[in-house]
Amino acid sequence: MPIAEPDWDRLERLRARFIARQGSQPYWDDPADLEAYDATFGERIGWKWDAVLAELAERGWRPPDGPVLDWGCGSGVAGRRVRAAYPEITRLILVDRSPLAGADAARRARVRFPELEVEIGDRGEPIGTLLASHVVSELDDAGTAALRRAVDRAQAVLWVEPGTPDDSRALGAERDRLLGTFHPVAPCVHEGPCPMGEAGNQRDWCHHFARPPKGIHGDRLWTTFAERMGIDLRSVPYSFVALDRRAFPPLPAGPGRVIGRPRPYKGFVKILTCGTAGLAEVGLQARDHKDTIRAYDRGEGPRVLAGGVDGKGWLVRSTGTDGAKANIFRQ
Image (tube, rainbow, N blue to C red):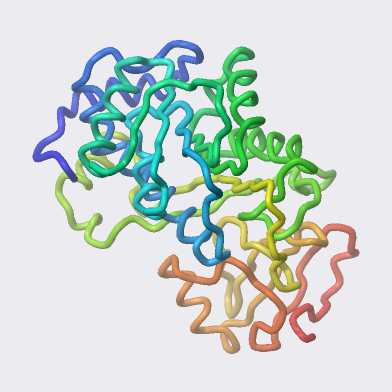
């Protein structure tokens, strides 16, 4: 943790504000709140951005030319994580309804990246990449309109939200609204509407889990933070979409992007995937896929199940089928 001993009472007050979801009211009225937040809650959001950026690297994506705009920046975690991943970014624009937060995020970015051009405030110019992080539950009508105006000026959008059903579905609705203008890059492996809202699929939602850095579980400050805030350090759920106006090469055919975590049963696991054919629940036998299953247990399993996973697997259920077993891995 970047601070020696957090102000636990302050963090508990912040936590209560987040749970209350204040809507149009800014959280930030004290620089010490931002300091405590950035080292704890903000750092945890940074782990989600690390997972998103790692997946984008796997897909071979890089940001388009133009400035990066961090919309609703808070302490600026998203902008700093993205700039660290893409050193070619030369200009970062920070926007927040709290002037205190914008100034704090700018200070942190300039300290971390002295060569980076950092600005506060949106001038309405074209944007290379728009970043949005943990904003969807706080948007009123005016905020939604403002964010959509910024999206309309962007070449690419990276948008991360908590992995709750409501936040994920709201994000999925924004993704579908932008289809035809933007191409989905990740986590989607298809350009069709999100199948999560289709009849029979309401129990599912698009979410994933990030891995905390090594050593977190043995760190006294982080374990105290988790206990006092009621947070499970082993579970860092998130939802996200990465969209780009540029066409993006499709992934190999197969079941698709893994959703959530594999669910273990005796001798096999079930994995929910989302692909070109919709949602599919895939079964992997432990005897045939023990290394893959162990990797999932460590939080390191493959994010996309394509054709040819050892040639063995079966369909448990799928959108538009009668649920009969069918081999789906053989080419």
